[in-house]
Length: 86
Image (cartoon, rainbow, N blue to C red; front, side, top):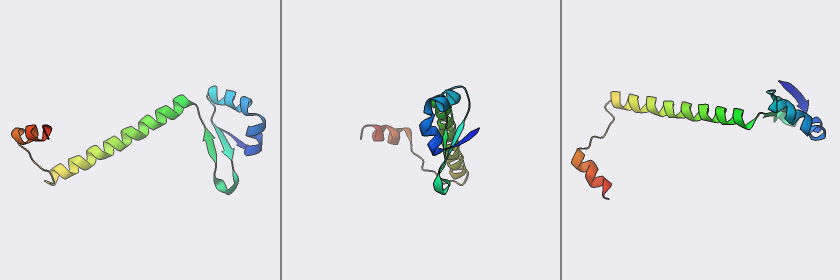
């Protein structure tokens, strides 16, 4: 990972963009520790997919725990069909 200051990124953006496309991550140092990391869109999409998968797995775990505790609502097939038409 390359660490640079904000002034350097504005002066040499193409150079750093080419590095990112080549697989490098760029950390842009900002005041008050409000830093940024520049990554490719493909890498961002992969990280976002992993985040969403983790959220989904957490919801599944919560649902499983509720079912084990008996915290469920049961419906008959007829009740479910009636709800479809509502």
